Length: 151
Picture (cartoon, rainbow, N blue to C red):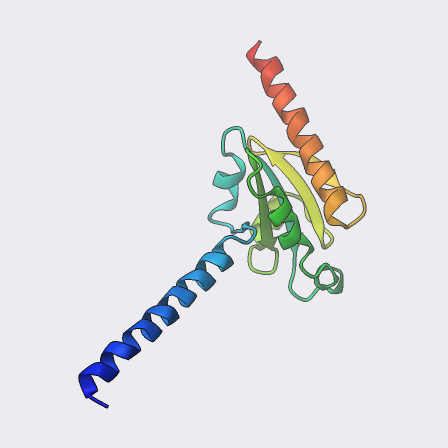
C-alpha cells in the first residue's frame, strides 16, 4: 500500500480518537461540581453574596465519612443548575483551622452557610432526597430573610 494513502486512511482514526477523548473530558466535567474548600478559600466562598453553601466536613480516615460513598457527589448532581446553591466539602485533616473556626467536633458534619454565617446544621437521614429537601428549604428561608431585609 502507498505510504501516503496509508497516512490519509489513518487521519480519520486519529480524529476519532481525539473526538472520543474530548467527549470523555466533557462528560467528566458535566458531573456534579462539589467544590473543595480550603483554609484559603472557605471564608471568601461562603461569603458570596446571595449564595447558600451546603458544606460537608469530613476527614479521610473516618469510617462514617467513608460509608457515605458518593452521596455528596450525588447530591451535587441533583443540585447542579439550582441557582444560588453551592455544594462544598472541607477535609478537616488538611484544613483544621477552618473546622475549628466553624466548631466541627464530629465527622461527618453538614452545615449550611449564607452570607458568611452558619444558618443551619443538618441532622437528618443521609440520603440524597433528604439532603436536597433540607438545603432547598434553607435556601428558601435565606431568600425570604433577604427580601424582608430589603423591605
